[in-house]
Image 1 (cartoon, rainbow, N blue to C red):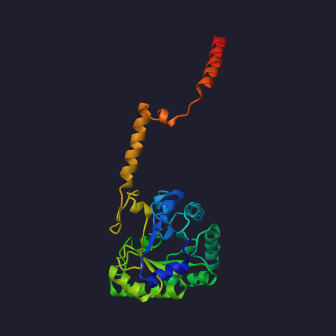
Image 2 (tube, rainbow, N blue to C red):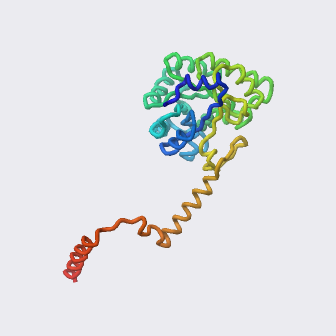
Image 3 (spheres, rainbow, N blue to C red):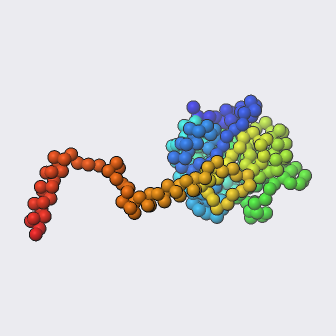
Length: 285
Ligand code: KIV
């Protein structure tokens, strides 16, 4: 049965860790869904790992909708969260809700938006209208690179207080959970202790209420960069590359497809066809 927002929130009360991973298509969503993942985030990281963009800024609503459709079709149990792409919620609450509704109508259960106190009024507006919102603070891939680059957040007392206030404000605004990205482990733990909604960490230590990784990082498929916090559970890039290499060799040598992978005619039908074919050939001479 599909997990609900309440199910996810209750996991924190039961001190049960929440498992989250990104996915962007039907086939991998199906694998995640049947492997115990509780939340599938259709992250705007799709722009990088699926479309080859340099960062997450360029991915569009239309592109995200296609990724979400595949994930919705591939998952029966996991709660699906759609990441609102850069520019799709910034200008006005009414613009944010129009775009959020597109994801919910498609079949997603919630949306995620990046930002702290500055985005709290939009979170409030969306949640008041019944749209579950996941927050995202710490490193914000849509905007942090424009200012500071990809830096660990919460290294000083002042920045830790900022993060804490952002988290408190998002909770007050109705967010059902908050992603903490690249926040120092000590501060991520304190935020997790203080909030009653679950925190989902990425590069933020083990004391968050749940963990998220980009699927292509976890599977070792995306090799352009490897942040320190990424654990590659398999080297899919090498595995896939070896398999495709074998295919190339087999096709070149004629080894593939052999009779095991081909279809045949019944011999009597083939005989009739041979007769026809030979008479045609003789006519052409
Ligand atoms: O887009 C994404 O994949 C994310 C995760 C890193 C949390 O926002």
